[in-house]
Length: 291
View 1: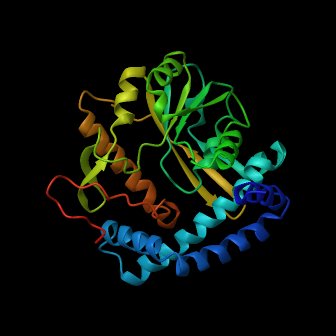
View 2 (view 1 turned 45 degrees about the vertical axis):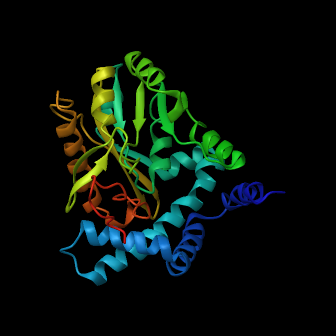
View 3 (view 1 turned 180 degrees about the horizontal axis):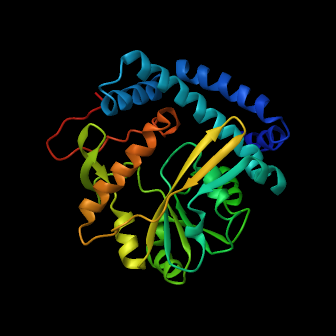
């Protein structure tokens, strides 16, 4: 049996553990990973330094350590998210906030940034609406893991996972038919198609303007879904539709997206995906921020 098949089988067994036990395992793994995964630890610490220069170093380090813990806890939680019964998942995931935005058939984009709890939020929506639901994810190079991720993310509701290589046509078709698009455009995807807008204390950050562009092409409203891990499971909070979005200025729209995300991150600093080199791509002539 390959390591990936063994890992998926292990997750099937972990799904049966009580949540406090599973979270305790995740805390132990996270604390160990913070010590052992030196390159990623340096990335997380640098991200906190760049984004929160006004915060004491000891607090930033505590946030970074907790970020590794939450990363591991949410990863292990995929065991019961994707193998547990529907009743179990419903008992541990709560969708709150402006849930009325899911009613009707107005084309809707759900801005779902990379909090570690994003897969819990990805299940909260199809458990709460019968509307067609499309999402875009990169393919995992391991076919066993890719199949596990895709099956887990599509286990409830009318969900269609799209590869980035599929292009925009099926995305826009779904929106114009009154569907939902679960969009995660807040990572550094390189210079192609990116614009440079502020994010926290960094004035020029490569950011994909797809939220604005898809909203215009699909004639869609935009709501945000901020997913938070709690001791009891997860809370996915849906915001009201954003006023005056999109505009004719996709750069200004993308800067607004980052401001909205900043505000959400400040409510749970350790739960955002800080192990990613968010500031890797720099404008021409500017030095790396990770040296």
